[in-house]
Length: 317
Image: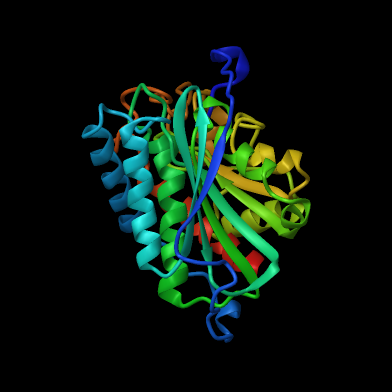
């Protein structure tokens, strides 16, 4: 999640772009239709999500301690995610742009089939800040979205609507990658996206359970999931307008998402209902070198990853 403007250096980003497509067309052979769209969403194994986080940590460690825009660690992270998706049968596309004099990349993955005029999209930013490996911000969201995409493949899921997943570059510089993606959609293709779900920091070590209150249908879907497991939620305000849902929202696309908290302080009331420590930040390692694989609450990561799958199944069937 990017810092608010008042807390970061303004970045002037001249963006030039080349689209590189790999793996063929979105309109390729679709899975045969079936009744799987009506099935309950799968449980997302938190061990699998943590295995992706371990890989992202290893990538950062091998590349100067971060996975930031324009650095080798970011491209290695993207290559890792893309290889998993390609092997699982997704159609992947890399979108290249330039920001702050460095090359950045978005990765977009489409699951064959579903009504291409009705797209449900889930995304997360894959870049870290230069100060650290970014395992909660935002390895957590990236890994959960990846594992949910792989669960789609394992299930042979045949949704009524078309599923698309994305991993954004240069979010920490001001949502550069997601803004580029949205700005370069035709008006017709923008209109086809019925919902964009954003996952930015979902494993905070002193977690809260925050739901975006933008689109009412998406919001209710997430709230229904958490009500079903007996976890109270609050409306997300700390990150409002500070992550990759903002360009979609500004373009009129319905948005929603989840958040477990950054550098705001957990109140006594929040600690009473969620556990954890009052008077301490939700993530004391936000944008710091200590945002490592040790900076994750497994319970929050598990619940939120399951919520990702629940919402995608519910909204795409």
